[in-house]
Length: 281
Image (cartoon, rainbow, N blue to C red):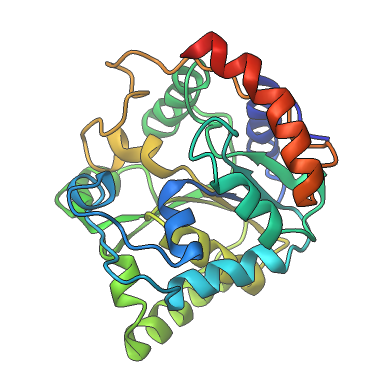
């Protein structure tokens, strides 16, 4: 059963602190476009802020690999899914593709947002300052736009990997795709007792998929996404960063319910979101 978002945050952080091997992926609007075969509009956040594009109305190689990861759940592998009032058509699409995912492995894509962000930011600071009680090593996999911070990041991360920003297009190139898959699996096998802190756009979900397959029982693979930008890029790129107003919308308690069929989803979606949307509109 999935907890309310603040309790879910505490559960995930406890897994990290206790060095429990697991994977945590997050599925938002960019991922939704890719697994649905929709192009990204010019000037969208994906292009202007995150520096990746997808101009084709088809499911590309990256999208198909993401679908594969949704359809093959294994072990301690969590899927952070969007709340119904965000990207309204995204949740039923994810539930349809991930119909084999246990509700105990469904979580929130917005888990690092709102009131949870200050707690997460404090956790990041404890790693940077060496005051964390966490025993495992840290490896960073972040977008190449943070490459000018290599010296600073290397002071507290045992290894730093810069991932190309334009993930959807480069994954169409067979040689580049194979190289990144091979590298992701190799770096996972080379490490034990390691927290992989990942922020690589939609490529995060695919990297985690292959890394977890390569070494599922020794490491932690967590998609921190843009919550890591202040650390990795040295800039705040979202509205839930420390110097911005926090997002305060609460996720409805939808996971753990029987919403795996379209009929049940439609019925419960309406019951859950109508009063919520009325309160936040």
